[in-house]
Length: 436
Ligand code: LLP
Image (cartoon, rainbow, N blue to C red; front, top):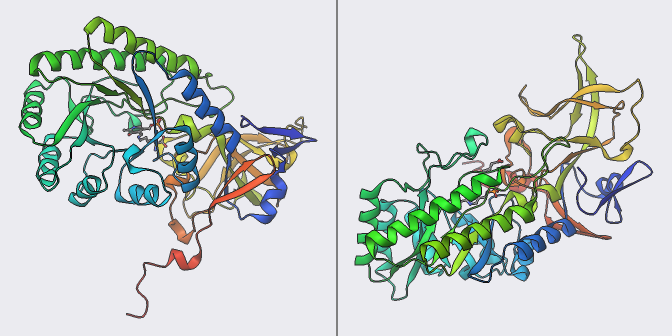
């Protein structure tokens, strides 16, 4: 479960040249750590394998997985776009210096302010979720004289075989409009045809997250191409862009199936190349929106063990100085993680080894990061590592029980870069009204 540039020397884990048990002496735990070379490696996989001679292939990073200004700069250098979903995302991305013209703006319930900001800031593409939103966008677009480029989000009705909370394209899903709802499709075509400056470039579909079955992506691509061909035929509108969303899975446990990203990407491109030819579509741009697969397995969290406990009922606990506030995924999705002791890694287990539940410090029995982890006896002060926490952990972190959000560092060779500082107590209470 090691990251790209992680290695083990004398039973100690290192990232680049940095010993992790030393790192936590100068940086507060829980500490989110990213392997910068690992992210660069993923970027190069997308650049190498998501490419075609028939159309442009654009990788749009889904920033909901993890967003920091430093990452925006890495993505800009790579020529990637960024998917944003709120004013807050847009604000951070703009402040980082990343061009908003390369942003794809999402959301199933965009506020008026969000739509107006996206128009004013000339965000590259707006993904319209529904007819009501399209009407509101058109009203706001009246105020400007430049084209507003959009995709329309549709639901292709494909099961992605993932956790129900992260399935997004079942017929009951809240996102987009169904490709089978032709009344709505005709209404939206009419609205676009009547609009002076809101342009429909094509369609967007996202079928879910942490998907391990390449066939789901192939099916989504084929379904979308069939749908686009039919839409063109029925409405005589010409479309040039298809965005297939994100959702590529990563490994969380050693026993998880290996997901071969290069093969998955090649398969998607080949499927689209074939479909475009067969249907005579004038596709100019194919987009994907990976979040987790770009950062998830290059990130990990370090905690300090505050001690262990054996209950009267013989249950063993490792207490870590974080938990559900910095990683809600086990509580929310029953997500499983690989856990180790960074300062005594890979020692052969003795007969003193114990089975532990790794638990956090929140006042919740459900604050469990991993269950039944067999480790050599854990001691107070050990550096506990939880692997593959690079996606949807920091970004979903919270302040429950007055916990402050953790520091985030990027490491490459012997460089440690703090990209997000630990939230201070003053920042924690900065929105409270005192003495009023
Ligand atoms: N595009 C759209 C429109 C999305 O809604 C998402 C994720 C992505 C792209 C990126 O998906 P990815 O490549 O990261 O799978 N919090 C959940 C995952 C929620 C995903 C939401 N949408 C989790 O922790 O598993």
